[in-house]
Length: 204
Image (cartoon, rainbow, N blue to C red):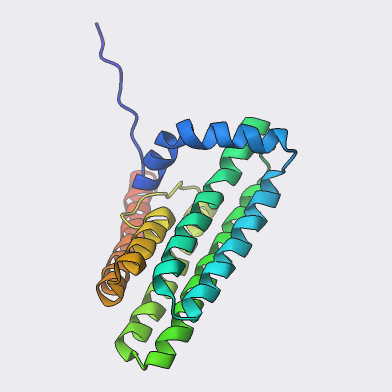
Protein backbone atom coordinates (compact mmCIF):
# COMPACT_ATOMS: atom_id res chain seq x y z
CA UNK A 1 0.00 0.00 0.00
CA UNK A 2 1.47 3.32 -1.07
CA UNK A 3 1.82 6.11 1.44
CA UNK A 4 0.09 9.37 0.66
CA UNK A 5 2.55 11.90 -0.65
CA UNK A 6 3.20 14.89 1.57
CA UNK A 7 2.55 18.15 -0.24
CA UNK A 8 5.69 20.18 -0.76
CA UNK A 9 5.58 23.93 -0.18
CA UNK A 10 7.91 26.43 -1.83
CA UNK A 11 7.83 28.75 1.17
CA UNK A 12 6.53 29.11 4.70
CA UNK A 13 4.00 31.61 3.33
CA UNK A 14 2.41 28.95 1.09
CA UNK A 15 2.21 26.53 4.02
CA UNK A 16 0.66 29.08 6.38
CA UNK A 17 -1.79 30.30 3.75
CA UNK A 18 -2.96 26.73 3.18
CA UNK A 19 -3.34 26.04 6.89
CA UNK A 20 -5.17 29.33 7.44
CA UNK A 21 -7.96 28.44 5.00
CA UNK A 22 -9.96 26.97 7.91
CA UNK A 23 -10.20 30.57 9.18
CA UNK A 24 -10.01 32.72 6.07
CA UNK A 25 -12.54 30.81 3.94
CA UNK A 26 -15.46 31.06 6.41
CA UNK A 27 -14.77 34.80 6.80
CA UNK A 28 -14.51 35.13 3.02
CA UNK A 29 -17.93 33.50 2.62
CA UNK A 30 -19.39 36.11 4.98
CA UNK A 31 -17.77 38.87 2.94
CA UNK A 32 -19.19 37.32 -0.22
CA UNK A 33 -22.70 37.41 1.27
CA UNK A 34 -22.15 41.08 2.09
CA UNK A 35 -21.46 41.66 -1.60
CA UNK A 36 -17.82 42.70 -1.24
CA UNK A 37 -15.51 42.28 -4.21
CA UNK A 38 -11.96 40.96 -3.68
CA UNK A 39 -10.49 44.15 -5.14
CA UNK A 40 -12.42 46.19 -2.58
CA UNK A 41 -10.83 44.17 0.23
CA UNK A 42 -7.41 44.66 -1.38
CA UNK A 43 -7.88 48.44 -1.42
CA UNK A 44 -9.16 48.37 2.18
CA UNK A 45 -5.98 46.57 3.19
CA UNK A 46 -3.92 49.35 1.58
CA UNK A 47 -5.70 52.05 3.60
CA UNK A 48 -5.26 50.07 6.82
CA UNK A 49 -1.53 49.79 6.12
CA UNK A 50 -1.33 53.53 5.48
CA UNK A 51 -3.07 54.01 8.83
CA UNK A 52 -0.46 51.78 10.47
CA UNK A 53 2.27 53.84 8.79
CA UNK A 54 0.80 57.04 10.22
CA UNK A 55 0.79 55.51 13.69
CA UNK A 56 4.45 54.51 13.31
CA UNK A 57 5.33 58.02 12.14
CA UNK A 58 3.80 59.39 15.34
CA UNK A 59 6.14 57.21 17.41
CA UNK A 60 3.49 54.89 18.84
CA UNK A 61 5.39 51.81 17.70
CA UNK A 62 3.50 49.22 19.76
CA UNK A 63 0.13 50.33 18.40
CA UNK A 64 1.66 50.58 14.95
CA UNK A 65 2.76 46.95 15.22
CA UNK A 66 -0.69 45.87 16.35
CA UNK A 67 -2.37 47.80 13.55
CA UNK A 68 -0.09 46.47 10.82
CA UNK A 69 -0.76 42.88 11.94
CA UNK A 70 -4.47 43.66 11.74
CA UNK A 71 -3.98 45.14 8.28
CA UNK A 72 -2.08 42.03 7.16
CA UNK A 73 -4.99 39.88 8.33
CA UNK A 74 -7.28 41.84 6.02
CA UNK A 75 -4.70 41.48 3.24
CA UNK A 76 -5.01 37.71 3.49
CA UNK A 77 -8.75 37.80 2.88
CA UNK A 78 -8.81 39.15 -0.67
CA UNK A 79 -7.31 35.99 -2.14
CA UNK A 80 -9.60 33.78 -0.06
CA UNK A 81 -12.62 35.82 -1.16
CA UNK A 82 -11.56 35.55 -4.80
CA UNK A 83 -11.34 31.76 -4.48
CA UNK A 84 -14.64 31.15 -2.69
CA UNK A 85 -16.57 33.62 -4.86
CA UNK A 86 -15.03 32.54 -8.16
CA UNK A 87 -13.97 36.15 -8.79
CA UNK A 88 -10.29 35.40 -9.41
CA UNK A 89 -8.82 37.52 -12.17
CA UNK A 90 -5.45 38.46 -13.58
CA UNK A 91 -6.10 42.10 -12.79
CA UNK A 92 -6.99 41.21 -9.19
CA UNK A 93 -3.69 39.36 -8.77
CA UNK A 94 -1.84 42.29 -10.36
CA UNK A 95 -3.61 44.83 -8.14
CA UNK A 96 -2.91 42.78 -5.01
CA UNK A 97 0.82 42.56 -5.73
CA UNK A 98 1.06 46.22 -6.66
CA UNK A 99 -0.73 47.46 -3.55
CA UNK A 100 1.33 45.10 -1.39
CA UNK A 101 4.46 46.92 -2.54
CA UNK A 102 2.86 50.31 -1.83
CA UNK A 103 1.71 49.11 1.60
CA UNK A 104 5.17 47.88 2.53
CA UNK A 105 6.76 51.09 1.31
CA UNK A 106 4.28 53.16 3.32
CA UNK A 107 5.01 51.20 6.51
CA UNK A 108 8.75 51.67 6.27
CA UNK A 109 8.30 55.32 5.31
CA UNK A 110 6.24 55.81 8.46
CA UNK A 111 9.00 54.19 10.51
CA UNK A 112 11.61 56.36 8.78
CA UNK A 113 9.74 59.53 9.74
CA UNK A 114 10.04 58.55 13.39
CA UNK A 115 13.65 57.35 13.07
CA UNK A 116 14.71 60.65 11.53
CA UNK A 117 13.28 62.48 14.54
CA UNK A 118 15.35 60.19 16.80
CA UNK A 119 18.55 60.64 14.76
CA UNK A 120 18.76 56.83 14.64
CA UNK A 121 21.33 56.61 11.84
CA UNK A 122 21.92 52.84 11.95
CA UNK A 123 18.20 52.07 11.97
CA UNK A 124 17.67 54.40 9.00
CA UNK A 125 20.34 52.56 6.99
CA UNK A 126 18.83 49.20 7.96
CA UNK A 127 15.34 50.33 6.95
CA UNK A 128 16.62 51.36 3.53
CA UNK A 129 18.33 47.97 3.09
CA UNK A 130 15.13 46.16 4.06
CA UNK A 131 12.97 48.21 1.73
CA UNK A 132 15.33 47.71 -1.21
CA UNK A 133 15.61 44.00 -0.42
CA UNK A 134 11.82 43.68 -0.25
CA UNK A 135 11.49 45.26 -3.69
CA UNK A 136 14.15 42.88 -5.02
CA UNK A 137 12.35 39.85 -3.57
CA UNK A 138 9.24 40.86 -5.49
CA UNK A 139 11.23 41.72 -8.62
CA UNK A 140 13.15 38.43 -8.73
CA UNK A 141 9.89 36.48 -8.57
CA UNK A 142 8.26 38.61 -11.27
CA UNK A 143 11.32 38.41 -13.52
CA UNK A 144 11.65 34.66 -12.96
CA UNK A 145 8.01 34.16 -13.96
CA UNK A 146 8.69 36.31 -17.01
CA UNK A 147 11.30 33.81 -18.22
CA UNK A 148 9.23 30.77 -17.31
CA UNK A 149 10.12 29.84 -13.71
CA UNK A 150 7.75 29.88 -10.75
CA UNK A 151 9.89 31.37 -7.99
CA UNK A 152 8.21 31.43 -4.57
CA UNK A 153 11.15 30.16 -2.54
CA UNK A 154 12.77 32.11 0.27
CA UNK A 155 13.04 32.31 4.03
CA UNK A 156 11.59 35.82 4.48
CA UNK A 157 8.79 36.46 1.99
CA UNK A 158 6.09 39.10 2.57
CA UNK A 159 4.07 37.27 5.23
CA UNK A 160 7.15 36.47 7.31
CA UNK A 161 8.40 40.05 6.99
CA UNK A 162 5.06 41.44 8.21
CA UNK A 163 4.92 39.05 11.19
CA UNK A 164 8.54 39.69 12.21
CA UNK A 165 8.18 43.45 11.78
CA UNK A 166 4.92 43.63 13.70
CA UNK A 167 6.11 41.38 16.51
CA UNK A 168 9.39 43.30 16.82
CA UNK A 169 7.56 46.61 17.15
CA UNK A 170 5.16 45.25 19.76
CA UNK A 171 7.98 43.76 21.84
CA UNK A 172 10.04 46.92 21.47
CA UNK A 173 13.04 45.31 19.78
CA UNK A 174 13.37 47.81 16.95
CA UNK A 175 17.10 47.56 16.21
CA UNK A 176 17.39 43.74 16.55
CA UNK A 177 14.30 43.33 14.36
CA UNK A 178 15.67 45.61 11.66
CA UNK A 179 19.06 43.84 11.72
CA UNK A 180 17.35 40.45 11.41
CA UNK A 181 15.14 41.64 8.56
CA UNK A 182 18.00 43.33 6.71
CA UNK A 183 20.07 40.14 6.77
CA UNK A 184 17.35 37.66 5.93
CA UNK A 185 15.65 39.83 3.33
CA UNK A 186 18.82 39.78 1.27
CA UNK A 187 19.37 36.09 1.96
CA UNK A 188 15.93 35.57 0.41
CA UNK A 189 16.95 37.56 -2.67
CA UNK A 190 20.02 35.36 -3.14
CA UNK A 191 17.94 32.21 -2.54
CA UNK A 192 15.70 33.20 -5.44
CA UNK A 193 18.60 34.04 -7.73
CA UNK A 194 20.21 30.68 -6.90
CA UNK A 195 16.90 28.86 -7.43
CA UNK A 196 16.46 30.32 -10.92
CA UNK A 197 20.10 29.55 -11.74
CA UNK A 198 19.66 25.90 -10.75
CA UNK A 199 16.38 25.59 -12.64
CA UNK A 200 17.96 27.12 -15.73
CA UNK A 201 20.79 24.59 -15.56
CA UNK A 202 18.26 21.74 -15.64
CA UNK A 203 16.76 23.05 -18.85
CA UNK A 204 19.22 25.42 -20.58
